[in-house]
Image (tube, rainbow, N blue to C red):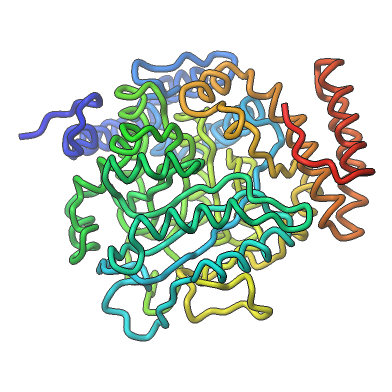
Length: 482
């Protein structure tokens, strides 16, 4: 019988089913315990923040109580505190990125993904290095600086050598004033040796979605292929960190299993990383099951409505305040707008989820991993963010300045990261406005930069930032950073 132990390296112990179930029972029993709920909410406020024994602001039990609470007044306070925390740690900055799908060859049998091996209707495609170059140029011409590469699990078609070659190709493409400065990697769980190779290749964050932490459901949803091994998959982040990767990204596919179970286990995974490695998740993603070729999301009984989805995001922000939170173009503009206030700090823009989709004039749908709900261009997304009083950021400075892993977390948890992020965001926005933006976006953007410059507390940093922005506007100098 496995016992709960956040410091264990065994998945059945750090994501312990009995502990999750006891947590859900505790949350249900206390969902109307307003004295307890008020105390938890007060504890989570930025000014009162004290990290728990395992590095989170709230324990998985405390956070689960908030998720179970249905009292309208306290749910509203939950949302308000989530927005306070987002502002305290990340300000009004929203980091932008795009996914780049390299190959949809896959040997797994995942029931929720159109790339599953038995799907005979989807065309299979794998990009050559020249095709990757063209995809990268297309993304650079949009203004992107940060990519997340995606590939199915196939040891023959997508071996680690192919992934490494693709990363090298992406970093090698310098087109006009464009560069991809950070490549995050979302590929299947692998070995410590392969994680070392990814680290040496200069990746940013290693991202791996758990899909579901509920082991019985996991085994059912992954009937065939190497991904069927629940423990190997769940323990991947420990191997990644052992391989030297500082920044890892968690996430579940909400809608596969009951959301309260997934939420508690997700926070437990963050506690585990802190307990063992002293560094929690660099990012947490919140995808929901969406329609795709051969996939009907209505077949899964764990679907959640928009209001519950927003509550989950807010509770994650309270529990793990330092983490970057990601929402993709799976969600439409209205959902993303609300989610930004609840704690989201990174979004994709102008995304195409098909293999080779960026070089196509018309959005291809036959190789998409999921339907894209927000189909606006990157320029439209950036302008929309600024109209909502957010600061679009294409910054990659921390990664290239060595502010990763524990160093990044120490800055972020203490609030010091704000002294770097704001001017870096302004300078990368200035690059975008100068090189890529439409006239309408430029007009809004330069006014926003002028206003946001005044928020930089250091006179010297403000002066240098303004000088760098002027150099960006008037010369071909790029890539200034603090």
